[in-house]
Length: 281
Length: 328
Image 1 (cartoon, one colour):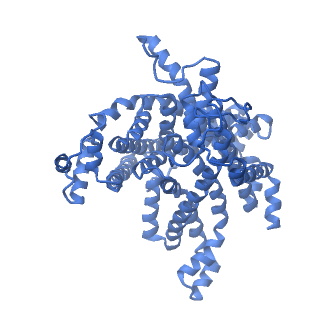
Image 2 (spheres, one colour; image 1 turned 180 degrees about the vertical axis):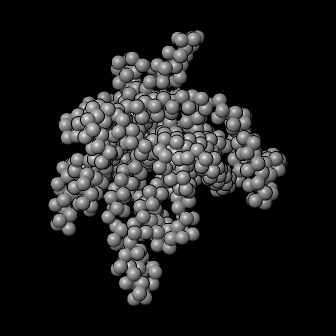
Image 3 (cartoon, chains in turn purple, cyan; image 1 turned 90 degrees about the vertical axis):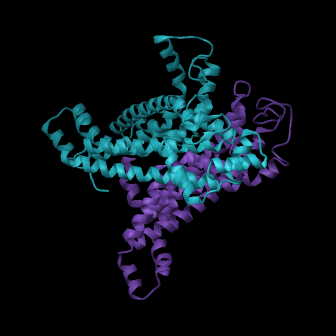
């Protein structure tokens, strides 16, 4: 663990990303204390520019505090990012493990299925899913999970394919361990590092996807989200630039931080690769 | 690849593409039936009348009273004859609506793609030649930035900067409203409207292609045939262009093909921001009106576009690189 942290720390970008991420998590956690009350309520006159009348980031067309919206939106963005990633991981890891461990016809079938999901335009598909199952937080998470599992399945399958013929797995088979036990206790723990790296990137893209969906008006109508804030600011951009600028910066910082942390994780978990990449990436 | 093996390769890829398209049709069909409420009441709601007799008539008209597999068969036959259903909101066949909007989307995505590929490869190649210098770091930082920015927000920021503050470029539509232009003037007008949307859509992919080109060029630069070329005394510029870049481009092309689907998905957002009259904007309007027939039609058409595009890249790849694997 200490070794891991030492390697992670060496990547300065990753460290900066971690700091930003922690700050955003704190913002989300303390949003109800920082901005008590509903972010939907009027706080002041409409279109107050940033810094005036106690509005740090200005107010929107109905006099709502943009900063309060961003703080409360952080909760939704992070939550959707995390939950849909967990859901996508469970689909992807299961399918990838089955395909990689069993091989043969099952592998073929699962990979065709995965390819299909990688071929269809994922954003259009997500839009369609949310529209048909009516926009709620549940359908948004579901749609994001459905379009983002294929890379996980591919990575897990590749890991399982190479691990299942290794000696320690063969030893476990000879000892008469059940297949499920082998998959869960012998192979999966050894395939974890690429999954960890991938999941931080998946949280980032899930946040981007969620913001795009709510920008199109496909967010949960009862929840304040960053994408909704930008969507609301779109038509009045000539009048109130702050309405769309600040929520966008929040998304950018969060996603950037997650990407940087992902790179740091990748360096720390695959030291050999990191050294190779020294000049190459 | 040897020319004699090309037809077989084409046939296999074609068959695969056909299966994917078939699966998409089935997927669409299942989604219609997964939607809450039965399709007849949805249609009735959209056309604004809903008594029992009308509902029954609709059910009969669309075969909704038949068993599911018969309905699937009817739906499949419809799609094969380009009958993608009827938009009761707009009182027009879906295919007509889409066909009318398709050229605008193709223009936008084509321009964005060309811009992203040309600029991305150039920047990536520049970064690879100057590894470790400030130019390299700058290109890497720019790539990371666009990687992390929501595409619709980039669009809005460009509007804010170039249309609202500088007033250089128009911020919405495809042509100036209320002015009749012909010939060169009309083309220039559309081009001016195209700049911001195409830049928005292209910037993200520019970042992707720049990173990819840089990485593959550095990989290729280490290989023996490059060292040989240098040892032979080939001038540096020629080594980079003819030996390194040419070989580094192949993975970029493949990747670009895989990403075509996302480019089209991104165009929904960009067309929404810029009111660009393409199928993305059509999808957004359908979304507001909960016009499922149009949404499903857009999904089908974009999927087919992606499949065709992938087919094209496969083919291009096979022609360009004789070592390419033709199995699968």
